[in-house]
Image 1 (cartoon, helix red, strand yellow):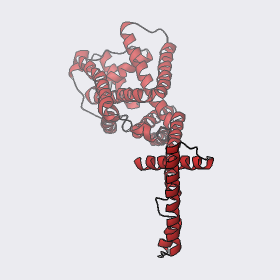
Image 2: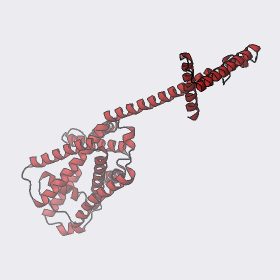
Image 3: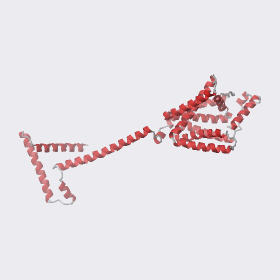
Image 4: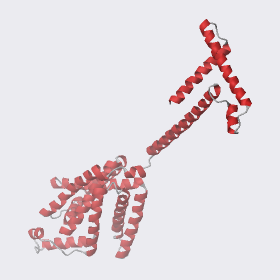
Amino acid sequence: MDVLHERLLEFRKDSDNNTRTASARCTYLDYNYDVSISIICGTYLIFGMVYSLFGYRCFRAIMFLTGFMFSSVVVFLICQEEERLPFLGKVAISLSAGLLYGLICMLVYHVGLFMTGLHTGFLLGVITLVLYSLFGKISSGWISFGMLFGFSLLGAVMNLVFQRSLTVIGTALFGGFILVASIDYFVEKFLMMLWIWDRVRLTNGEMPCWFSWLILAIWPFLTITGSFTQFCWTAGEAHTMKYAYTRASRRRLVERRLAESDAAARQRLDKSRRYRYLYQVRTAHGDVISQHKLQGVSRGEKGDESKEEDDKQLEEEARFKKLEDEKVLTGEKFLPQELERIFNKKKMLMIHAELWRN
């Protein structure tokens, strides 16, 4: 930032001394790039593309980068006030703070969403101030600060409420800004960005060139393109299904598991009842093999006792059937125990037929 401000002051001083006119500035491109700033801007070009097109898909990486850039810049600006620290010490402190806060934003879900919404609201506040400065004038710096603070806080809170939609729009907006800022350095050494910063600080600066407006026009185009791409193709629902365990989602998960366990328990109970009813039907009538005969077959035996029991059971069934038919024909009343036996037999037959039908 010091290098940028020094170059801006030198540029304005040269402009005042008429060593370089505005028309010459708009037709001349300075190719004397700083190596470190060029590397950073080249890296930010890649980050901006990822932000714009894959912001919601690469949710955790975006949360880390958002926290890292925010914290490192803020800490570096604070360290600039301390003159006793060497430059490398300031860089190390800012990078360490950015790494720590980036990890917090990546691991703590709501902190990452809050920071993403904070950046979105801040950029919307900057856009509002710049547009208003073109048609009017803000009298106090507190108004500018209040607008930026209000937009930032509103964006952070709204992003916690409308998580998917505002995260997609916010990452596309922030990614477009990063791309435009990086392109602006390679074209005109941040002159457009510094002009925007002058509008925020309510200071007068030189109007940008015609191609500066073309660079700035890329920002809304990238925002719309990135939002459309994410909503239609790349966004999906991946991170919310894996990581967003809010109170409502946990309650729905518990209810779904309870319903599944209840269904499995009912299925096991129905299966056990079905086998129990089938066993009762098969052992309650004489049209099946008797228990003694099954035991004899299991032992490899077939004695006279089992045969006699089978014959007795068949005779009893035949006698009862004959008696039932005679009473039906003559209209004679059945005894209570006979009615109970007929009722139980018909009930077992109905259960038997129903089970085999299922």
